[in-house]
Amino acid sequence: GAVVSQHPSWVICKSGTSVKIECRSLDFQATTMFWYRQFPKQSLMLMATSNEGSKATYEQGVEKDKFLINHASLTLSTLTVTSAHPEDSSFYICSAPPGGSQETQYFGPGTRLLVL
Amino acid sequence: SQQGEEDPQALSIQEGENATMNCSYKTSINNLQWYRQNSGRGLVHLILIRSNEREKHSGRLRVTLDTSKKSSSLLITASRAADTASYFCASSGAGSYQLTFGKGTKLSVIP
Image 1 (cartoon, chains in turn red, orange):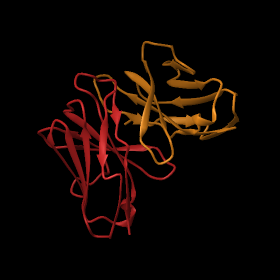
Image 2 (tube, rainbow over the protein chains, first blue to last red):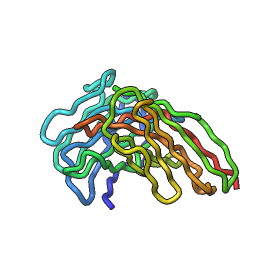
Image 3 (cartoon, rainbow over the protein chains, first blue to last red):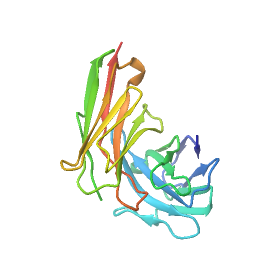
């Protein structure tokens, strides 16, 4: 089946630094990818929709200048948490629908971010 | 955006028993999907039911959809300890890839 990878799987950083998380579709092309955030014991909340070759679409309440998204190719989207603060500590998950499918989505394994 | 609600929030059962989880949503949907998440891990797609379907089976899973009540249920029969995980429903509207997730049910199956 289709696979989506994320890197790194976990990261610890100091407050004020920036962290980049990669999401890759390994065996299919994805013009659209989604980024979610999940706090402990809570559900996934959609942060933004990443579109290849164009600007990302952010959900209400998500700061686009803080969470920079770049979808530079059909297999890679990156999420950069800029000037990270402890409250940004969370589990970040990406997903991608295979081309042509509006039903199936494949999720990455997630990236756990801890900001000290 | 839609906000799914699930109940119960937590469910603890003995191995071999059936587990039923419910999900409600607020707006019209194109399909509804159920996902499983082991602690601290990514999501695994379990089953998808379209808005024109009322029931679907996959192995030990049975999903129902009642669009008039805007609700869905997931039944896991003959549960196993390995079924211990959090289960989420997620809905998408017509012509949209976006998924809106419910709050999830944490299932514990006791051996």
